[in-house]
Image (cartoon, rainbow over all chains, first blue to last red; front, side, top):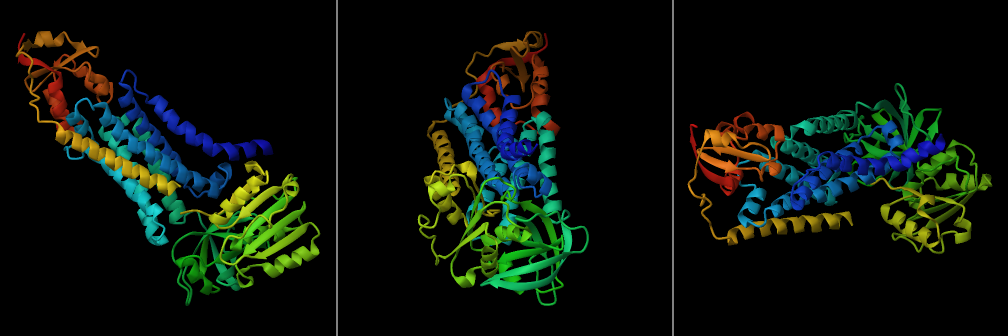
Length: 420
Length: 121
């Protein structure tokens, strides 16, 4: 049973990403057309299918995330399928025009947005919206609040692309697809962005953790969110007497689940919203969606090797707080300076009292350190499951270093919260 | 990596679009009106070509053999095929809720012209 669930988690997203677009292309495959025109039509349907999968992968529903291998993984595939859709959709009009290339004038008329034709205009509009939405995705300097609205252009681009098909007279298979796409976008807007899926909480206390980090304690005001140690939640905070919430859901890892459903969140000031949260105060209302993730398997049979970068130590702290370890576990904790190291005293105390837990705490300065001397030997790693949580640069460096020591990808698990 | 792929593919796309446009500009203007003989075709002859494998249509006084074009037409076959062998000007001018066909379609038509529609028998 557990093996079947693990297989679903592992293969569901790759399968969806192949089956949906290829299914569309096979179902709508044009027969008896010149190959270039047929390729133009197939790329359109592949793009349509990939966009639909990409939309599904941005839903923030805990149960769906559990089936699809976690929200963090869903977002990685959301980005990948979205870009793949864009690439094949760029080919779509070019191939249709290229089919008419023996007559350059007709080829240009196939492509030209200047003809008075809504089918052509809507196709161009959809593509330009995708282009605009993706440009803003790749410009990192845009503030998150502004970026969210600009990113919504991509959803509008998907709908416009489907309207393009309807205007071409291909309404038969497209109307249900349009309905599904609109339903997914509406679902995300209402349950995710507007917070209908969220549970109400209130901030009861906040304590400084380290430099620019704070631990916030939340008490549920009704039914609590279903969260297990090692998971993260999406939380949005309201206004207090002095504190002003930023009206956005952000991911925060749970450091402790106390008294069954009181959540302790570790928050590092990394952007405008999280910097504001350093001054959060008791009494502030919060809304919580989750829990998500939980990339560490505390019941696994193998010894574990954990690597944390900065605030990435939080899910490991949550697991240590949840109860005694079942297997020998070694934590390599990397931080800029002692002042930046959250939970360091607690970790040292656990290492002193739990013989199964070994702590290797390393002050790194501002750069990714030379990982070679810090990692266990290939022999020590041969039976271990490796869990990494930290900034993307550190996780990438660790994956390479572990691969060089013969650790295969299936024994390396990581989480780095790239939700943008 | 993904960012680089996005920028490179987007730039390549616009270069290709510009290529199609320049190609169009470089082709000398041609009179695409029919050079075929002014063959006169009546309703009876038109009606003998009423199947997708042999599909003629009369549009705005001209007859077009669009058999070769039918598979390329973007709409469902059930929309266009019933007009084979018929005077189809109204259908051509009132495509989907009264909209006309695009200039792109107008530009394609002369390629398939085979004669003048004279109606009658």
